[in-house]
Length: 423
Image (cartoon, rainbow, N blue to C red; front, side):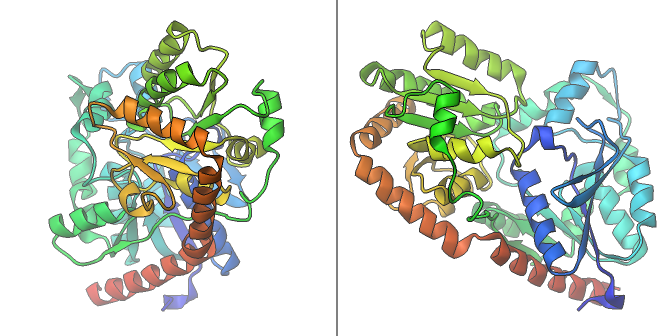
């Protein structure tokens, strides 16, 4: 069902820049590529947050950016920068106007909630078009401590944007959506409990298995001074308290005491500079500046990203909260074993002892447990290969982007049917 034969899918995330890449950006770009292959016209409408160019093409997909603001009195430049990095509840009147004017729209796909999600909701309703919402960062499954950190920049600030939220129906985005898409099963289950409708679907993230199948891991090691035979643990994620790199570092300090030739590499943009500073302080205090590398985030088209996966012996994701964990799929596609937190979407993604190994990040002995697991894998290279191969087969069988794109199209068709009934 495609009324009028319209082809344009408008994807609306809060921000979209190649220099500050994360899982959400990967998902939007990859599903857009699948839509182009299917003859559709995906376009990304977003804010100017963290961006320099108003219009560009990323990975062959057009990106249009618009002026925006945070409707609070008293925000400093540092506050605005922190909101740009993570969780900012922005408003953009020029983006809303563009949503109303965009030609040949088949469907609106919001990748944000709050005021921006409300703008998508309102534009879709005014134009009598379907709209779907993807929950990338979690809504019903987010620890309170993380919410408190995201809200810290607006703490004790006077908000003048509440009437705008009411105008755009920001609090009705999830109840009015023609489909709510959850990337994690735990989030889907909680959404079904709390929302008053059944238009809630599970759609996992995907991976380009062929892209991650091979790379020159030796070149990555040589570039960063890591000996070929050294045991290397890798973490690729935002440098952020949510991702819990401090736990991995504390575990590595214990592990490295018995494995002095071991190395640890962190790669990711710093969404919480204060947290990154704590990591650097502990690295220096532990005398591990030559064994622990803290590298900036890489663009998704940078070949060093895939080289890093192939260079490592094990990938570790010790997050406190994780709706899905797309980097696990990337590690699997590279044939690498995974140690991950038994939380959020990771619980249904990883099979403990088969495609990976779990830790409890909240356990009092979490650092000791993680250190012991690192030691176990370091002693058992055959186990690394066995679990890595099981993960690779899992990624190929269930998570290739072509499959995810087909499933998303099915959800779009259901959303169109619901929109037609509502109209």
